Image (cartoon, rainbow, N blue to C red; front, side, top):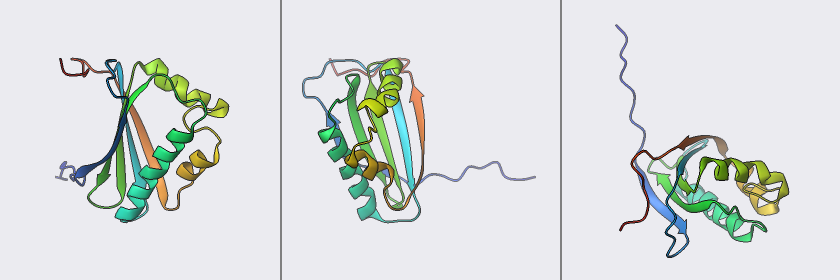
Length: 138
C-alpha cells in the first residue's frame, strides 16, 4: 500500500514586517502568499523581500485595506511566505484588481522587479477568514 505521508515543508524564520504603529484595526482577512524560487539562495530570498518593501514604499496609491505584512524566509533558501492581514476579503481583492491603476503590483518599475525577479519560479495565494479573531492584544 502506498504511503500517504506528506513530506514536511522546510522551517520558516521571520525576516521583515510592515505594520502601521498603533493600528487597532482587526483583520477580517488573512492572506498567505507562498513564493518559491528555483533553488536555494538565502541572499536572494531577502533581496526579493526587500524589493517588495521598496515597491510598497514607492507605491503612488497604496491599498487602504492593508493592515500588516509579515515575511518569513524558508530555512531551505528557496521559499518566502508572506502572512498579510487585511481589513476584509474585498479590500484584498480590490487591491489586486487595481494593479493597472496603481494598486498592489502596479506596472511601476519596482513592482516589475518583484514580479520578474530572477529565479522566481511560482507562488500561491490563499485567503482565510479568521474564525476567532486575530486583532490587537487588549
